[in-house]
Image (cartoon, rainbow, N blue to C red; front, side, top):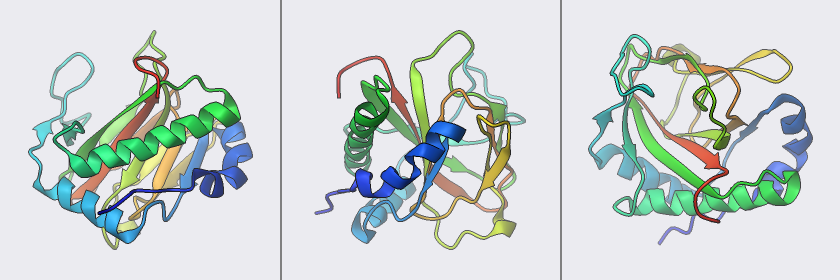
Length: 199
């Protein structure tokens, strides 16, 4: 049985100052092999629905992914969320972020699609504090595309490859996009929120 145990202090402590300054952080080798395989397997066998924009419309020119929200019917995903809740507690202890809950969905981008520039909090909203994307594809190359591009707090544009077992973390109010992917791309989109139940 996989336990999804991650020592967030060991992974994050040395990168915390950079996160405060830029609003971005990259963590590699986040989970053990069994946990990673469980997520990869589950992401390949669930039923996806076409994602829509905030107002409920499907706009593939803007957003081309299909998604499946993680709930109690996703055993591996539920354990992933439990680990993310531990990360939320870490951020509450170190940065006083006031995070109270988390949510996540599996995302599948077919070749030829991405997600154009956006912020994760709709205008006038601030429930999402920290966004994160966890990557599930083996052997991803630069030529495969699908990078996440983020404009950080210092107004620098950074682009990160969706490498296996990588968690990209960023302030939910930062502008970002998913570049067009050249092969099917699996990930978990994740948000740490300041509303709902206490974690």
